[in-house]
Image (cartoon, rainbow, N blue to C red):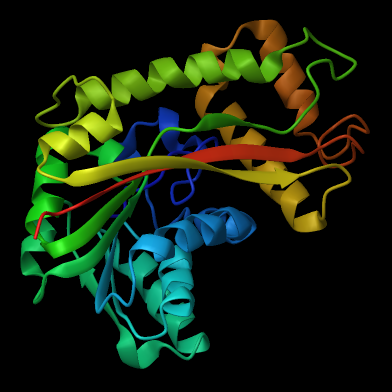
Length: 303
């Protein structure tokens, strides 16, 4: 499912901030470069998450990346589990084209396949049950998250594992006081984004309000041995160019998507922060960093 992304603010697969968005209008393929850059930047976090999963999921035959986007995590699964077949599932064919090209570059093309269609219904088209089904920030784009998890569980082999990346903490890029504007800008952006995200969820077809207790939701979907772990991406200042580019892209997207919901002073601050001609912008500041925490929840289908 292509919709795996939030916007630039929080998602991996989604551009993190895709959060706030009217996603009917989101063109995921257009976001491909942002999604890919973000996922590549977050690779150390994903590698830690996959290593954690690999301690319990040994030698899976089939791994399904549900809501794979451009396939960065699919590629990491191919590397982490050299004996596994990988199927990337997404609603966007252009993103899956990128995923296929990445698998070829990694030398895993012969054990990599794609499936195009909307989650969770498209999972019924899988030829085999999955030993590991991974959904990174894709479930929250579905109206009935409980039903989506149940559909995922149906596609698991007995003893198979479902792992969902949901929750964690909003990312931070800047000190609380950046020398102009009102301190605490990112916290206020988070508040706006939370409201937009709630509206996005309410507007989804078949939207069901649920307590977002992911281990409880996994248990309700029929899984045992639920566990959760949070993984950190910690890129302190001074950041490499790629991390700076991600911050620029992320805050520019925030300005474009959420600027109208911020108060005028914060809008002015954000405009300065993303203006390449302003020496105090994130293009030039020495104090830019990337600090993010993503949580993975997993459970096992009873044998």
